[in-house]
Image (cartoon, rainbow, N blue to C red; front, side, top):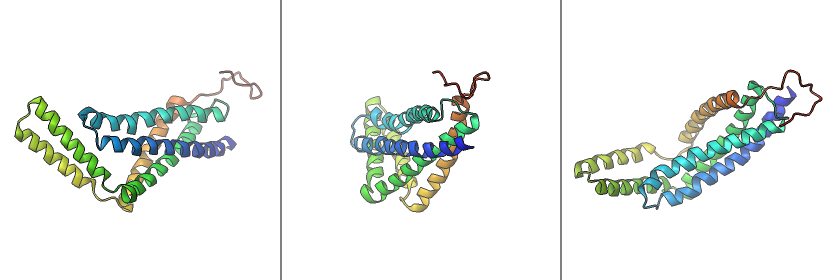
Length: 194
């Protein structure tokens, strides 16, 4: 039981670090993506900086978190620690995203979507697409911009609620993947070897 409260506390501390790193990986590259003339950079770049790099960070910090309690933890302890870490990181990311899109750069999302549209048109023209296909693609992008909706607290809270569910599922997966039970014949007084 004592390890569970330690895991929550340490998970929250590491979650702050992960949350700050997620802010950096999301907001700073967005300026580049909103002005890049590379179709592939605009399409693939956000997947790398918004999904793969945070996933790698989460894995690295999961190992660090496991090390804080001696290198061994059960599935339950892993889920508690990882969920605490990722929930705090998700909260920080949601709040900072809201503040950024509402007050700092309210037109950034539209600039980014317009840049996708411009790069898509250029790419389709180079690929030999006809005007009808290009118009269809532009209509889809315009619909996506409209669906993105206004940045408000209700949408942010809804997004955070959904991300909480996703974070819990990720914590379950990480708990299953990264659990490490203490060997049966190792006594508690022995130091773990790694």
